[in-house]
Length: 365
Image 1 (cartoon, helix red, strand yellow):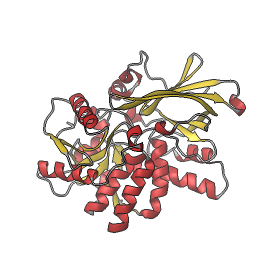
Image 2 (cartoon, rainbow, N blue to C red; image 1 turned 90 degrees about the vertical axis):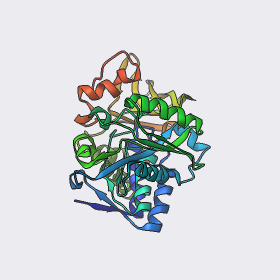
Image 3 (cartoon, rainbow, N blue to C red; image 1 turned 135 degrees about the horizontal axis):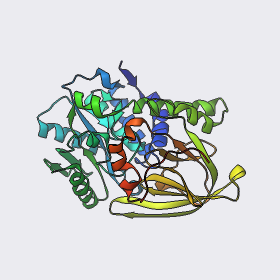
Image 4 (cartoon, rainbow, N blue to C red; image 1 turned 45 degrees about the vertical axis):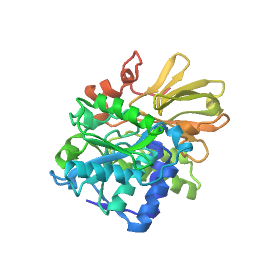
């Protein structure tokens, strides 16, 4: 069954998508402004459930690419996503493709809504990551054997590059990353064009719905003077995801962060407060949060979702916004089964990020 997203839904979706983005996915405020402008001018967007797609319908995932730290200094012009989308359609000889997110995360859950509103087409309630990941091949579309090219990369200067064919999706990541760096560190990309039958077998379903559900829970908690952290934990148990858990809370005492090779990499150290007083925790990230260390133990790791939340509001704190002195709570959401198959863990389990250990699920402290 299809449904509608209007301007009134964007606050909630931005909140929820940022939480699912595990610290990455781009600034949700920027994405919200882009989507709101398009919807205000063109009306609400119809959202298609995956099962509603015709098997032959073309679907093109669209997103921003690059280090999220760059967006602080290089705000998008706003024309790049639809340009990347339309130019890939032209290259394919297609005129009526539906946009789809590549990931669940801040700006990248909003960009497909902007494209859908501008083109007056539906958007698909699914994506290829179920959270945010830093590399293009870290998508279920890749795991299910779908080719990422042809692809189109667009910049704010109306420059664009068509990648017609590359021998595999690792080459797509490598070359697209290099182009993005040379275009200023952030671009918009359309890739993994596929038909409806491929979406049905490979996508992580219901992630726009989940983002909206989480965001509404946060806003309702504020209105009803409830604990927003508890509300988030309850709301995540949906679309195959597990119930979220707050692992610890504390104060940020150190942030180490650098932008290198097109990624924001670093660590954040958090000193525990309240029940976690006198304990120290460290989160390592590459655009997105990858794992939590506590003394000699690893408490949680990819692909489970690790998100730093503001302790008082329940809003996500993205990796580029981590600052000394912030009071935070760290949330872990168990990822759905499609993200934990042996094939998936080879790509985005700990070894996919050069750690020398295998995935283990979070059992609590």
